Image 1: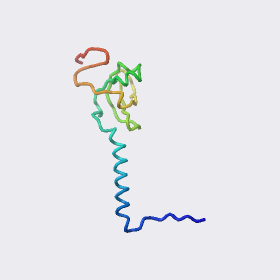
Image 2: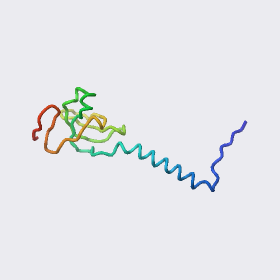
Image 3: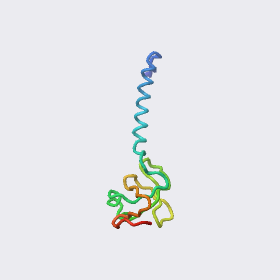
Image 4: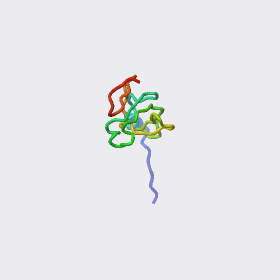
Length: 111
């Protein structure tokens, strides 16, 4: 038995293309929205409360974002004292105020 797959009629292309274009735009927005944040290269970060609860050994660490990651929702962080960056989920870090070292569990103190 031969099964034929029919393409849309040329008169229907405009409507068909609009539906595909809309679905494509929605898919791109869903993929890139989590990436939009103030986490960019060079920003100083510390572990968030969620990150501290999930990664206890990193709870009091601070570091610098040195790049992205192969994962959409992760960033590469070079923690202070480490030689190589660590890929970590964006929700596990929070931006530190410039000029203030606010390591979790210690009072704010200037650099």
